[in-house]
Length: 571
Image 1 (tube, rainbow, N blue to C red):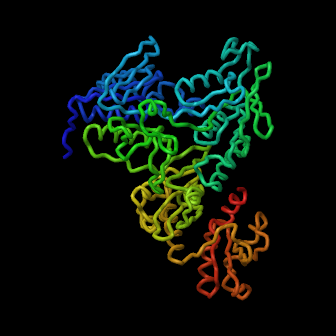
Image 2: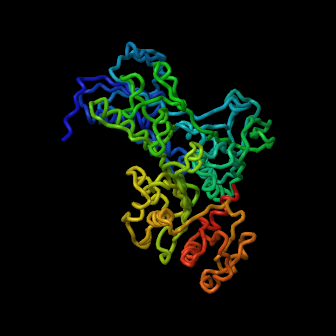
């Protein structure tokens, strides 16, 4: 039994009332009925679901009140916590253990003493000083008021905007028809989808050569296909240079390449930057990634100051590298851990593995753990990857959809390092299984043996997670030697698909012997060359590789088959 926490009437001030801050406050009260808790938030709301803001803009979450997970009244009445909204910290003295608070409504500045201070300031949307960035119709998405302003802008018919944003060049506008979203990360893609649902023609501009920068490029290609399929105009490898506005009120987004994109509304989703002004004010350490440096107990370099949420640097669970991860799940866990430690418990944050999921129209893209490109940046070579394309549930049950799965694991011991999954059905189920496996330090051999739920509408007797483990284990056991696209030069290419499939897509120079004919035509294959075997998804290529290996040929399976080739060559 865990003993009741004793803090001798400690006074804790929590700066920031969303996610990590709110979680810390509620947990702290549950652990210590006698603590004096003050939570301050510079905005008008506490504990709101900022992850739901794009869906409120799109209408899936209709009522703004639905975004308010808890209110000031909830914290006061249920938890006996002093909550002050529209209240900003304007000074911190770590030596005196005091904070200065400014009430936005009255302008009054007061000083409060603390025994422990918890910083949860979050991360601010990046808003670069580009020409015209303050023109009306250009929005960021961080708070409930932000979403409200966007909805009001989109819902207007004819409005008088004289004087808005100090602009008086026109009086009336028509409803928005065209939108430009800048930035292809989570918020950008969610805003793209929701603006399309509202009937707007949407252009997405991304400075990098792929959307969803945390993904490996070939998996991002699948996402880009979905965007294009739904009419999104995709502009990659092109940054924004500025904004202009015509006399009739139409915005134009200017890019580095010289293009001009007309828009009635622009959404800035370039990324976020940790809010570290308070940390610097308190004189605590800032890490190499630009976030507040904390230990596993969420303590900063000052033992009486803790920090949680999007503003902190934490260790990557897989690689051990310092990282910045702006996700609500880790922020909430960090808030709980800080509360535990303040009340004397030995709680520790294990690190983050970046588990995330994003809806892309009828599909979802999810990831957990590390990626191939990050391991390559670190100079790591002890890893292997596989691509598989299984059905989301039993193929004989209606509605099965194929999943695109990439799994990364160590060659030396089989430890699971990362996974990326895209599909129209069952994505969350699989990424959560991979995430838990990584968290527990599992290997691909554990995935082979994992007992997962099965019924025809939900999965298969051999679940895609099991399937990934079996394929990876076959590689490490030597049963299925593999190669990857890009290594074909000088090797004999054997395509074991049926001839009608080649009419759709083929590989130049490949010899076609359909799998059912292979055993009878082995004499047509060279024994003095390495043979790379191709099919659509690599399943038949695996069968063919087994036949060839056991007949004395030097054969390898091309991982992911033609499905992987199509996205790898796009990159």
